[in-house]
Amino acid sequence: MMEAAQNLAAHLYYPDCLSLERKRVVADSFAAWSRPAHMRSAHTRRRWTENEDRALLKLNSPKLAAETLGRTAQSCNLRLWRLRTGQVPKPSDQ
Image 1 (cartoon, one colour):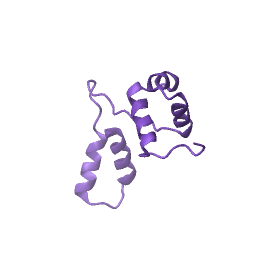
Image 2 (cartoon, one colour):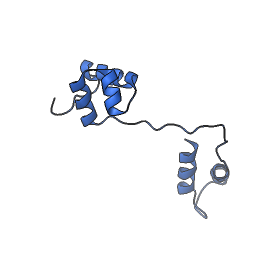
Image 3 (cartoon, one colour):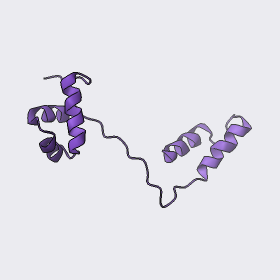
């Protein structure tokens, strides 16, 4: 997430902007940071779509849905449980 912080700091503390000196110094220090080779970047979460929810409910099998949707079986199993228990809303045509 550090790259996102760098972008935000650059947007908020652009050159010659009105800011507190201590805040600008910290924002400038973000610009000098680069990700070390051994550090992996954070994975962005893939949101579930209504079409994926429909397919998951229709297939009714986490393992088969995982192969079809390109997700993990655990992810499909958890989403199916959430759909069945009402923790997330079912797709509009269900």
